[in-house]
Every structure is written in structure tokens, then in C-alpha cells.
Length: 85
Image (cartoon, rainbow, N blue to C red; front, side, top):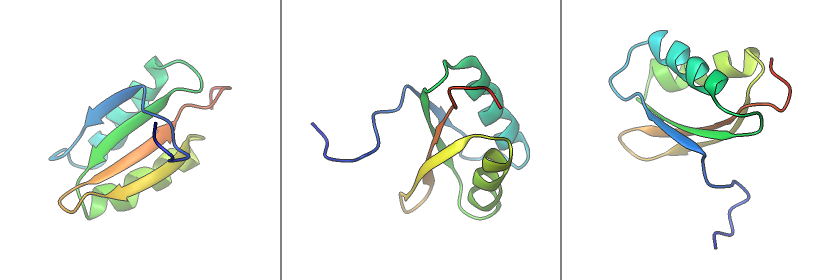
């Protein structure tokens, strides 16, 4: 059992190598297919993707719970809100 405050993701999306804004669009579309309250793990490249996608998701009403630096990519945990944005 993990002592982390973040639960296990309900789904995972590997967007390494995907340019902006396509990675944001794909993340948003995946979140819209998930149940309210579900957690999505998204893998993003360093640079523009990790700088742009979390801010865009927050502005769209999604809750970014954690960003983990995995050295050659970033793991972003984002939750679909109980009430759709």
C-alpha cells in the first residue's frame, strides 16, 4: 500500500513526442471519456508540453494533482472533476 496522498491512476496516456497543442487536445478528450472523479496519468515531454499542458488543463477546469519529473519525461496526474467543466 502506497503512503502517497495521490491514488492510483484510472487511465494512462503516453504523449511523449506529441507536439503542442495536440497533446492538450488529446488529454482533454481522454478526460472527457472518463468518469467524474477519475484520475488520468499523462506522460509529457520536457519544455513546451510540460509548461503549457498543466496550465491549459487548469484553465479548462481540471485539477492537476501532481507533476513528477521522471528525468527524460514528466508524469502529470490530472483528475476529472465531479462536475464537468
